[in-house]
Image (cartoon, rainbow, N blue to C red):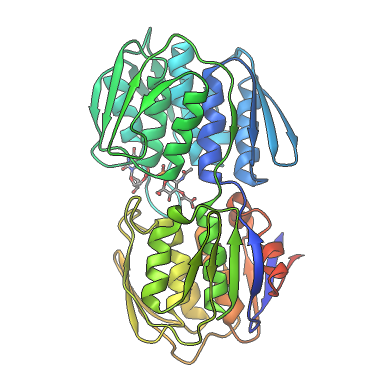
Length: 418
Ligand code: EPU
């Protein structure tokens, strides 16, 4: 088992590049199922979740071949249209194969993902819209069993702007008969990237990035050639790492506009931020103000940066109220921060963080999910003494070499096998 060991107290300085976005790459790889032939994706991060996606694609008779950050996916007709429990339980995003398989082959059997550490995470907003496109769907023995002779376009209004639900239905609608109008959809940059890729495959999609997406179904699509957008959550995590140590960190290969919500909050705290075409720099600050943060769908403050921002607020001057509105149980990092000496009162969906209460002290802590792992590492960067973060398989699902990137900025951090 690997752990991350951090000796806190070093100020981070320098420049570091963001990798490709996990949450963009996952739907893109499943979109490949919409067209037979050789697809080529660039800027694909080397992550456990990408490996799990490859495993599922291999199970569906696709060949995958990696060279650095380029991933070739050769899609062949699957022998069986099944996403088995053993793979889906490792990664909830596996449900994203449902829309493409159903649209292309008229049937699919996909294991139900089940809940996870951050919430119950149902898939009703994937299933109901597929029914509205004409699919017959039943849940049997833990599997979603879907059939449709031919999906037919419809006008669908989502109850909530779900990211995965929007992606699944967008992909399915590309091969529908007629026009599909999706209202109240997610507007995340990853949705826009998926639409861009689907368009390059021959799909007719308008409106990605707004509340309404319109898709004109086509008979077939061609293989993708696509470069994945930069990871805004990783970029934000690296900026917060610089900020929490009072350092001077420039994150390159990122899209500053995708980081607006974080940049605005950092500016409210008193940090000076500079941006260029594809970089963001946080400048040194030795005393920052606390600010309140509430997570919300894009362009609001991302839930995937809530835990890391909370680490920053433990060191702020004053009290901060952090509200989690996307997931019902995304405060698992609070108790670990408290074990490091933070003063945080968690209530349902709200955490009250009293900053600067005598600093943090290093401790053995346990990561409970991907972003909680990053939060504990950031806390470790400023804690006195040694912090050992265990269960870092969560970290490896979604951060490409985070400890190597932080070490390149001067952090005393290493991975150890124990
Ligand atoms: N929801 C439902 N029913 C559904 C789908 C979602 O009730 O059918 C609820 C969820 O339970 C949750 C909320 O709606 O409370 C938002 O879920 P959403 O569908 O938007 O999230 P997701 O597609 O499951 C993606 C990211 C998450 C990120 C969220 C929100 C991927 C692979 N995952 O999840 O990323 O937190 O959007 O932005 O894109 C992470 O990277 O750490 C991560 C958890």
